[in-house]
Amino acid sequence: MLPGCRMVHIGKMLLDASVLAAAFCLAFVIRFEGSVPAPFADVMVLYLPLVVTAKLAILLLAGRLKPTWHHTNLREALRMVLWLVLAAGLLLSWLQVKDWIVTLPVGYVLPVGVVLLDLALSILGMLGIRAAAQLLNEKRRRRAIAQNTSDRMPTLLIGAGRAGAMVAKEILARPDSGIQRSE
Image (tube, rainbow, N blue to C red; front, side, top):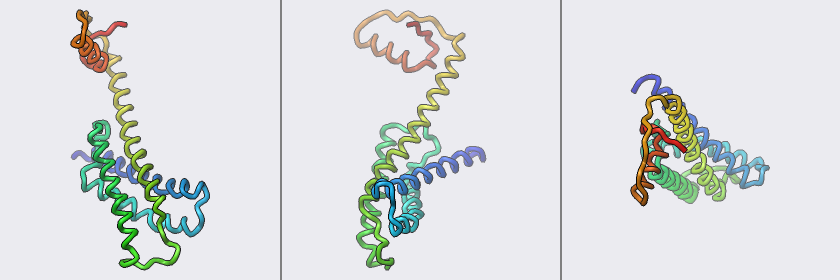
């Protein structure tokens, strides 16, 4: 991998980590209706690095943190959702058994509602930045193609029915096909 590509990949991982951290903190804010009580603010600070690191590790090991966001499709999105659900499930399981493993001061309990809100916000955030990257990439691609209209071939599409509709739909969807379209 080229050094510049590595920097982009690190930048995307940092953005993913930021989205996951923001989702976790926002889950507390939503759960406590905008005013997080001091003991729960301490819980948030205590669990934040653990939760973000665990989610990133799970997604990284599962191969869901790919540097090419603009190639994310519905199957990739579903896989990311499933791995985030698994991470939330593991966190909920850990909350049930942590008292046997680690003794924390009284009041350091992570509310289940926060975990569930965090899951929903993490899914929205992670898929949202990938969808935005796809939209920006598509916009750039269409703009570049629109600037190179001189080499397009005028084409007349004759025919009706399903086959003609499919061809027309493909022409509309693929401005890079080199076919000049008229309205």
